[in-house]
Image (cartoon, rainbow, N blue to C red):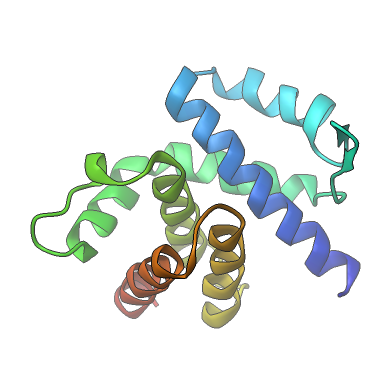
Length: 147
């Protein structure tokens, strides 16, 4: 895997983790970015060496999702099956969907299939195949609307 690809993959995973922390703890954005820059991106935590993340891409995803959260949540809500709502979703799942939706909206330089595939990889880190298919379906629906 090319280092840029690995760096972006690591940035996406870290962005989902940062967005989860933002959601759960309301960590101020500047503090959140600083904490990830200094302690998480490319760091060794509990003997696991984390891949060197593309920091600018990480920052772009995190700040973009936070800035456009209402717009993103509106798009996601429209793609959920009847009877489902964003508050019913697992908090990690919601951050994966938000980050993927932001990337589809704001990063036309990233091909649609690549953006969806990358967030499916992130989903695989946390969930089984059923949930990953759900992420695929929602992001595919968003992509058809915004691209």
